[in-house]
Amino acid sequence: MTEAAALLQRDNPRTGVARLTLNRPEARNALNTALRRELAEAFAALDDDPAVRCVVLRGSPTHFAAGADLKEIAALGPAAVSGLGVLRYWKAISDFSKPLIAAVAGPALGGGCELALHADIILAARSARFGQPEVSVGIMPGGGATQRLMKAVGKYRAMKLMLTGEPVGAEEALAMGMVSEVVDDDLLEARSLALAALIASRPPIALRLLKEAALAGADAPLATGLLLERRAFELLFDTADQKEGMQAFAERRPPIFAGR
Image (tube, rainbow, N blue to C red):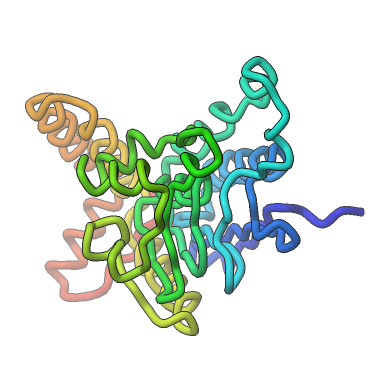
């Protein structure tokens, strides 16, 4: 029996954290159809699991994901590439409603970089390298970099990465606003799990509405984004977690959020 290309591990239910690990070591975690499908199925399952409040997506200690699996697509024509259904698999990740942390060590290139860009927070080990090298093999990014990378770092930095195909290291990625934090490699797992546990301790309905408003508002005029934010803010006053949070603050005790 072939081992899964995307390994899902739910931590102790009390933490609310799940880990999803890319597992194609023989291909440096290159994204093929099987791995994309497994990722999409895992994210759908995690979205439906009320015990999961935050997810950590990671690769191996030496490779996050080397990009698309060129062996699978090199000889294909446009119709065959379209038939792979890649956009459908990406959508399952972009539609994920819960906080997502990408813990990146080693190369995150091409589709691997685009996968990391789907996260809400990117933690980078010092060994991490980010890039969009598609032009070096005669194509261009096709998993969202022309949109997500542009929004993350701005036109001029994004265009340099995409037009040259040259990668950047963790510190440069941090300086350009592409990653949230840089840590030593041996601390990456502990830091990502600690951050995920902290986020998972927050009220899950508030987290979902916050992410929804932030992402939807990013593609809307400012006035529309502000209205989305305000309506989500108001809705939270109908939740038990809002009452618990404010009562706990008044009583000077830690809140216990039940997700209601």
